[in-house]
Every structure is written in C-alpha cells, then in structure tokens.
Image: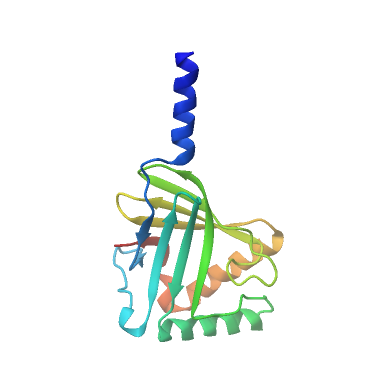
Length: 177
C-alpha cells in the first residue's frame, strides 16, 4: 500500500510540474558562427522573447522586427515569390506557439505545429523544434520538413541565406537575458 501511495504521489507531482514557475526569456539575440551576436535594436521597437508556461505546457515566441530587419524580410519574400515559392505574409510582429514535449529544471524541448497553406507562423510543410537550456538561457532552433514541398522550402531558404550577407553567418542559436 505504501508503494502504491508513493507511486501515485510521484506521478501527481510530475503531472502538475510542482516547483516550475513560468519563465520569460527576453532580449533574445542570434549567435553567429564566430561567437558574436547582434544587439537587439530595442530603440527601434524590436523585441524577441520566449514565454514558457509550464502549467499549459507551451512556449510562446513573440517577435517584433526593427524597421531595417522588416525590409530585409520583405526582400526575401519577394525573391521567394519570384522563384515561384509561396512564402508566408511578411509582418513586423508575430507569435509562434510551441507545445512542450519535455521539461525539467534544466531544459525544455518544444515543437510547433506543421505549417499549412494560409499559415503565417511556420514555413509551409515544415515544423520547428526548440531546445531551451534554462541554465545558460540559450535556445537552439531546428526546422524539419514533413512533405516534399517542405523540403523544397527549406532548400530555398538555405540558398537565400547564402545570398543575403546579413543572414549568411547567422545560425539558429539564440542567447537571452
């Protein structure tokens, strides 16, 4: 009986995530291959943050682009359209929600939904995964294609990154405060 009670108690504690408070990682910036990073232009209204809600088991990524970054994304979207690839509508701000797959006091793994036609959040035919190191306040982001079209979209995205100097050295590693 004691064993059964102990097992139930452990399961209840694991299910409720007792001791894990919501976390806001803010002023997040991309880390470049050389280890440097670009300062977030908050004076121009830029924001990049991740809100981690353990109770509802999701991570909400909120991004507001600076004016110059917004213009760059418009150029990229125009190039994708000229290449015949549908590209999500370019907006200055957006939210992407990720479902938490795994979480403990050190790390979190979360996954977005699959990008579908008409979605503005995730590239068509792909999903994103986040790996968050809570001690270092770092985030690694990866993209996975789930359709042939998604594979083409990721391939074109890589080619575009190589052509646009400001994106060439950016990697999907993020450091937050």
